[in-house]
Length: 190
Length: 190
DNA sequence: GACGATGAGACAGTTTTTGTCTTAATGTCT
DNA sequence: AGACATTAAGACAAAAACTGTCTCATCGTC
Image 1: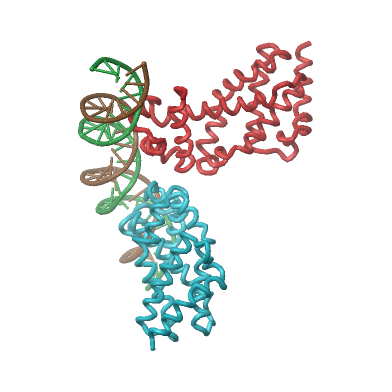
Image 2 (image 1 turned 90 degrees about the vertical axis):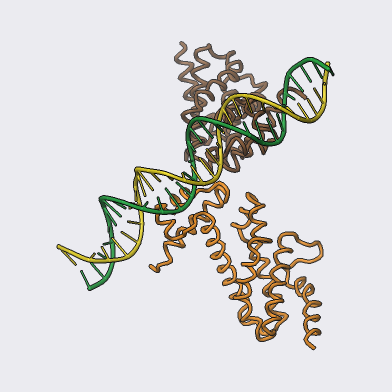
């Protein structure tokens, strides 16, 4: 039993609570009860209460997300293929994310804020940590940061507001979509 | 615009709120906002706050339920047929009731209490009011009250905890189920 | 038996909710 | 126009819920 079992159990319970009651209506007591842990323990493990818990949950979801994403992109040895794979997999994961769908349905404001404003810097930071090693064979550190930042923003935007002409969940469409950008990148390097 | 439009609009909003947040988490303000009415008006129309509102909503749902049920049983001119029709229609309505399903999922305790303890007397009272005229051609007033009471309890019980051998949503099964009881009733009258 | 971690719950301070009331605005009727 | 009823908005105090911290008894581990 690793030391993280208690924390992750609490985060599981918090996730269920957020789904059931929404971030606004949940109390620390709700989460304590749902996780079978006393309020004292909860504060000891997550000092700061609901906000810290919510934040910790997002970090966990985010790292899980990018764990799966990088696994998905393992073994691809062409830059364009890699970008396509990443975008498509990320888009499909987002679309398949039940938790995200529930939260978007019950608290669109909070979730949109997390996806596009408040939480975006963190998302970009985590994405950069995870994806930089994958793209470094093809790009400089600066280029990698810029490209990853851009890909995160585009993937989220097209997830939230799908285009009529582009489907980033489809490899062919995604490839077609990114080719001009990659060409421009190659050109800028000359 | 009848005078009941305001009330029923508020009840609609309350219903949505109860579904979204549960009886426990909703505040009067939530319902006031959802119904586009000021809190003052809400208290004027439903003095007593959340409990009174919840109660009024149940009364409305209940009368709607029995309105549909009696319509369903119109024109049946045999006692056994009538009972079968009522039981089957009631069971099917209960199973098809989305609001009930949502509430049972999110707040089983509260809903079960309403179905089996707190709210049962009211349900039986309303059922008696609606169904007595239908069964009076075949039964005395006392018999009618007893039979209706029994049918309500059985229908709710079999809805909440379906039997392996009896399906009150199926006319054949329901008829088979009630026949002994009706025979006993006929015997007792002799 | 000492140790650290935990559950239960007391506690005060804060925030939220409640229920009432007043005021100004709105629409209706004569 | 003027009297009338109804309402939204929001001030207000009282009640309730929530928060964050603390203490203490208990439990399992070493």
